[in-house]
Amino acid sequence: MSEVIDLRSDTVTQPTPAMLQAMLQARVGDDVYGEDETVNELQEQGARLFGKEAALFCPTGTMSNQIGIKVHAQPGDEVICDELAHVYLFEGGGIAANSGASVRLLHGRNGRFTADQVRENINRRDDSHLPWTRVVAIENTVNKGGGCCWDLREIERIRRVCDEHSIAMHLDGARLFNALVAKGESAGDHGRLFDTISVCLSKGLGAPAGSLLLGSKQLIAKAHRHRKLMGGGMRQSGYLAAAGLFALRNNVDRLKEDHAKAKVLAAELRARPFVADILPVETNIVIIRLADDLTAESLLDRLRCQQVRASSSGRQQIRFVVHLDISDDQFESLVRTVRSV
Image (cartoon, rainbow, N blue to C red; front, side, top):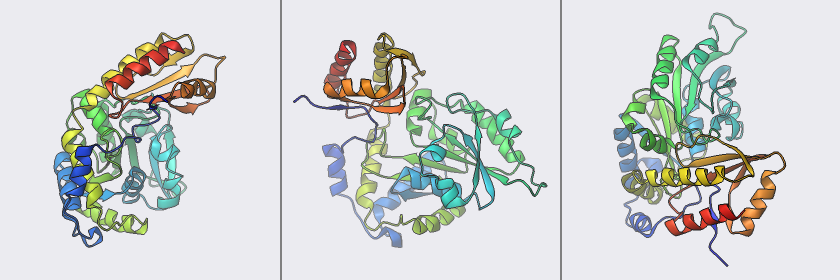
């Protein structure tokens, strides 16, 4: 049987031998006591990279996002985000369950809204009928938007609106490093604009688990308490943190290889008669809309028969995610498969 080419997500990667070796050599302690040297090193490096005072290592991106929102919002408050936002669609109703906040959904362009939209949707605080607008949450890159990147200038405009109204900003940076590489921006560019930032180490960077929440010392102290409440306090978690450190040091620049392959894949798919449309491809995600007579499941079945896995993102939408475990040989095989369908 031929090797499976798994494009369902960039979370399916396996640690490389070098990453495993780094994990085996990690100096660990009890992180609940703050005594795990490797966790502390990862947190310090992450904070320094983004120009933040502190960071907190969390087991998942969902947890770091939900804590990031919770340190700003209380029951009865409101969070502004796009209707495609991961924090709204794919985190189990966590904003309601964890923060007791309502959500104001904006209709942006592939998950990206404008400063004018934010301004128009801020609730007045002198009207007791309305929830207080406390947080604006941005996702970069936008998963449901085909891995598209935000314009940094628009984020700056949103920051100015938020400052005028004493509103915090949280960044769901699950694939932020993809955006930084694609746009030629620095982590510090984003660090100065957001109060809290969640960055994932287990997506394009290839670590087996873990995300960092970044912010001020005061906010991260609150976040530490909320992580405990959510059951996220781990013990000798330095083994996972070592993988995260290895990922930050070795797997960021190579993301451009994934982006290049995604563009080639998009071009091949665009030439196929069963593809009606493709979202613009900026990073490592390719989302196609199928022709009217074809369902996602039927095409996924055809692909599975040829050892290619992808995922459905709607009745007639399929998502392909390129990652570091797709070798050049596998990618050539993938292109041949696409041409044959």
